[in-house]
Structures are given as structure tokens and as C-alpha cells.
Length: 100
Image (cartoon, rainbow, N blue to C red):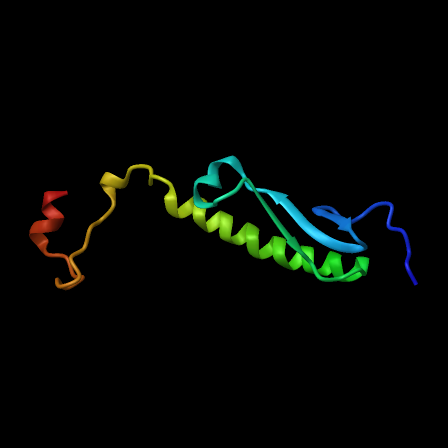
């Protein structure tokens, strides 16, 4: 039974009665990709399955993009961050306290 989907879920389109995912890559993250959009076959002709797949993939994609954005940012006031040598104990001496 083929039903016509007049309004496919967001970030999808139909081709030969199969749902495909399509989303533009944000401009600030395009340097990490070879193209400007993500496009792939969801391998289903059922709207509900497509919606579930899109929600799952979007949550993973948005989490990855968030971590990419935050790991690449310059940390404000980074010159004030404590820098520890891994070979040194994590305790502080009285002389170090008095230097501040």
C-alpha cells in the first residue's frame, strides 16, 4: 500500500518513495566537512520510522556540533587559569599563596 506523503518530516524528503535525511552544515563548522550539507538514505518508506531516525540522528549531530564549537573556542581570561605540571603534586605552598 503506497500512501502519498504531502508533508514529509522536517529535514527529510522523498525520492522513489524512500525517505532521505538532509540538513545544511552550519557555516562555522563547514571547515570540518567535505561538503556543505549532510544527505543520506534513511532506508524506510514509513513516515514514523523516518521521524524516529531523524530525531535520533539530530540529537547526536547537535551534541557533536556543540562539543566541536566549545572545544575550538578561545577561553576568556585563559591567562588566569591555573596551569599544573602533571609531575608536580597538586598542593600549594605558602610561598605560592603569598605570590598572589
